[in-house]
Amino acid sequence: MKLSDEKLVRLPPRTNKNYRNNNMNKSQEKNRKTAARHKRVRAKIKGTKDCPRLSVFRSNYGLFVQLIDDDKGETIVSAATKEITSEAAKKEVSFELGKLIAKKALEKKISVVVFDRGGYKYHGRVKSLAEGAREGGLEF
Image (tube, rainbow, N blue to C red):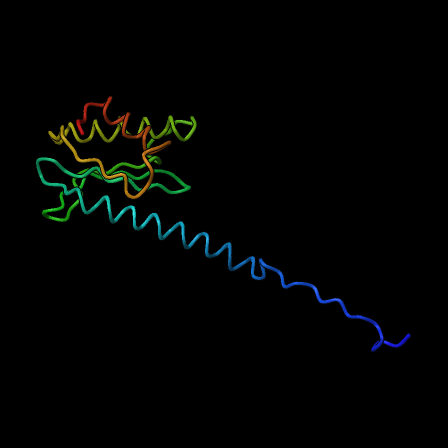
């Protein structure tokens, strides 16, 4: 039997041909959605001297929180999870961070703020931080 006599079977092309690109596209899509959410949130809120914006940045490393006066474009008070020495879970640490930022804000005679979740869902560490800030004495 010759090679030319055999029937060659053609396989259909792989649907997930470039799986690396698809994974990259997923992360790009996630970043795009987060940025769009952040833009939508920031369009509605603005911090002033009397009522600053409580801005949250979440990373794998920890949480970073700032009270920002958008009129002047300056940070009034800031705090980060590295200031807390607790070895608890991330949610408990973020709760303590909320209390810490509230304490620092009350020292500067700030009691009313606008909460900027920064494009993150109000869930998990962000929610825990907000609850800690409320318990610490801040009003949203």
